Image 1 (cartoon, protein in one colour):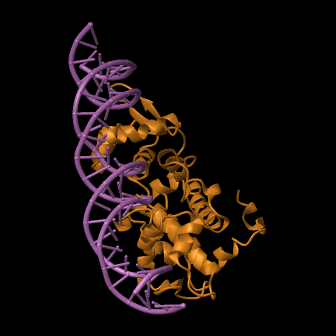
Image 2: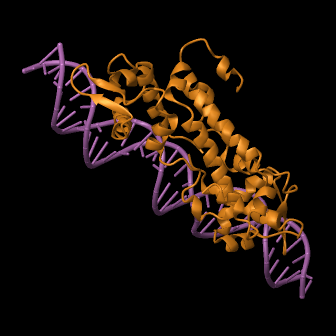
Image 3: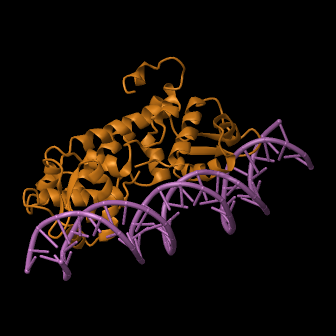
Length: 139
Length: 139
DNA sequence: CATCACCTAATTATTTTAGTTGTCTTAAAC
DNA sequence: GTTTAAGACAACTAAAATAATTAGGTGATG
């Protein structure tokens, strides 16, 4: 029941781009260094994001990546689905017997609801310093 | 974002025991054959369930396993937590930066809510034939 | 006292994860 | 017009997790 580094690092990339939105392209090198991640590994992750239109690439010197759309239009579900595959706790949910299928569907829909209703705009705003109030309730 | 065979088969065992509740012990052999699973593998899964008190074992001829409590008192969360570990989309949720932490917590709480509010009684009742209505809405 | 069932531990095959290595292409800047 | 920063593409690999398999017990009931 874990999300792998694909989804986690992919989200990191997209949050960085969201924070930089409107200020020109941002290179993977910058993002990799700021987050202490392998640039080559991030390249593998950004390829499917580019194919899905979630980011646009600008080649050449001083190039980099920009978001494919407004931060408010891109959800965490868009990103996770591209990098982790379908949001379902089991493969082939239809093949399961009714009792278990019912549970998997409830889980899938609960997660889907969170992912599809959390935008990059929501997430990027959580990084700006002091407003720790928002998540104080949860811990 | 998947649940492994541990959690899935563990749930299968528990649902079978729930359906058999009040009718004496049920052997792993019976459960394994009915679900076309390896008996030896199920033995590995039922050990932690027994240690957690979710099932009781009755040794000897015509022995087997019975639920450790009423089906209405055992939740899918009890079972999944024992076999899959803590319900959290990432390890070390506290170490994540605020933006992502917020998302992981929302997911965790959503899944937790489903798992802790779905009892074996709920699940076992879904196997009895025709009432496909309940999950018709979802597919 | 044989059977049937539970108990424990070691080993193995497969898959997934998390990268690494290397080469090539593009395009802006100088 | 060539340097150089940056993306594109492909193949390979080490380590860990997953999913079993195999083997050899122990205990209680009929």
